[in-house]
Length: 535
Image (cartoon, rainbow, N blue to C red; front, top):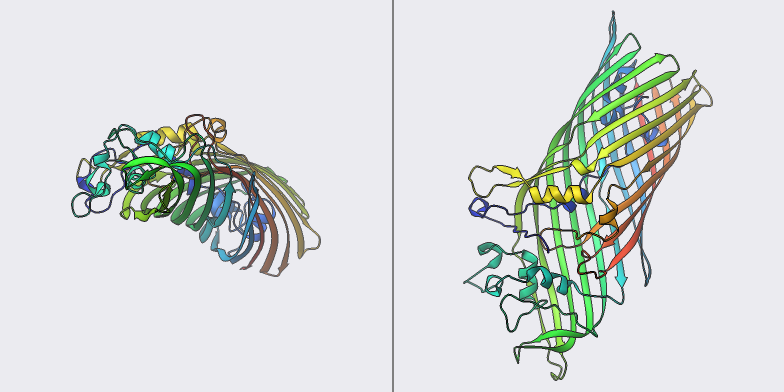
């Protein structure tokens, strides 16, 4: 069944304990790992764990600042051409979008010293480390079941008196403890009961023919402000530590619609369930905003002149989050032999507003690079992102004072759905002339979703009134770039192609039935330009 997700507005401290704040899917949506940074960093696939000497070192391995010999100030501009392809049995659906953003601005200062500590460096930077922009739509026909039947399956056992909205008498969203999707569906007649106040039926029955249409739009960002410190010990060991201050916003608009012929619909004239045609559209708006902080530690060792070895550890980002939104259903039912009489209308939830806490994944990375004289660089990185170790906290509504306690059910879902993701980064640079360089890179990230969850062998729980979700598969980045240096000034340009595969699910499979889903491919073609000055 769908986990109870009481979401409230107003006097939250008066609500019962156990109210869910966010789901594992919510945590997953706002903690992706993307290849973003300066043009040189992206051109070389982000393989800078052991390389350093770039403004993006502050987001990856702060020890990279220890390799600076001069101060540096620079900024990065990113122009992204995005295409979103969705494929179902009914065909292929495509949408596109162009996004332009300033992704990075940073400063590194260097103090050259005498003694074993050759230099001490410090840096500050702004980095857009995640962009959530994507949109997609799809169509499935025929369907094996209906969202209404899924809702009925987890609403069974709930007294309908606790679901019925009665104006000026009883508001089940604020006055009760039941699932908001059950409440919304009952008042929209997606689920009905005629003889038993605790047993429900959906619209889909034997002989029903139906289709499903969906449209999803996501937007938002994660920005990180870094303050890093690094040192150079005898040009052999370079250490670094940093603090990341994070600000994020995530907005999701989801519309899911079904049309059915031969459905089991409620006839208000006879107070009975009869055959007929049914259609409904479920709309959801979800907005999450938050802030937090993390720590980064790193080392780079140069045992011989041509070889560099690096390691970095990122703590989770400890996020304080606020979630707002609402759900709405438009419905239309036409019973057979009713002379064209139609029951139609619109129902919507109260607005919700609640807080939660999230610890994002730990990140561990190692790298090795070969610096071949003054002409060539080869670099290789491996990173492990521990998505299965994310952790959520929910408000403790049983006590005053805004306490948060472990979300045991949500954290159990995290461990059931997600696993560590592995990232391999490869980069190369060749200096054609003392001023002009060419670069290339490749970045591959494995899925962070366990096979049972990805293969529809588990029920996927959500909270609120949006039952849809997407699971990413592999992500690949291929990049090429050029760089030009003139005295202290530099300019770098990179072309980056990103391909991310995923699967969209309108709602979780249940009772052995397939539910509407689609294969998705997001393709991004980015032009990234960085410029700066070293002095």
